[in-house]
Image (tube, rainbow, N blue to C red; front, side):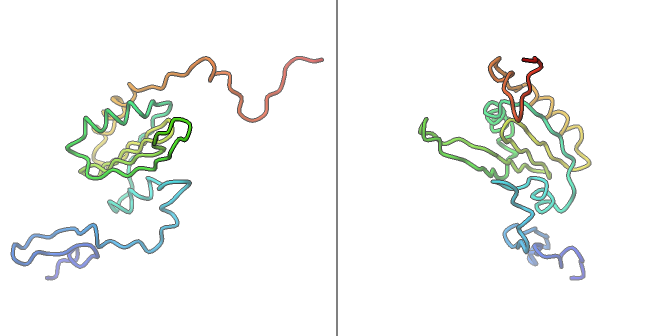
Length: 162
């Protein structure tokens, strides 16, 4: 066949049916240095690798990711293709917790939950979906206690003179 798409790595044609398929498992990474950032994958690089296009990205901060995780798992159960997770074991509580979770969904969409934030990624034709998901997830705002509001990061200087 002279189809230029069919000659691309990762594509194959079932000659009995004439249907072209994309074989995800035949993709090979030649350089993974950019894929891993910190302790897990860089979601932007992963999106480009996975879907071969630059994503539109939405960001939500100050999230209760445990509640958001449950919501996404239930709401998008039928659309989640695969879930990747970075977890850790907490000795004091003797439990496993997650740092990062990446949901790869149908139709070139991804959602990352990490620390206290979320990235919603989609193609340039899915702004309505992206905005709806961000509004839905904004309901899971993290409740900040009074003790955490006065936490000092870095150097604190006193305004009073001795």
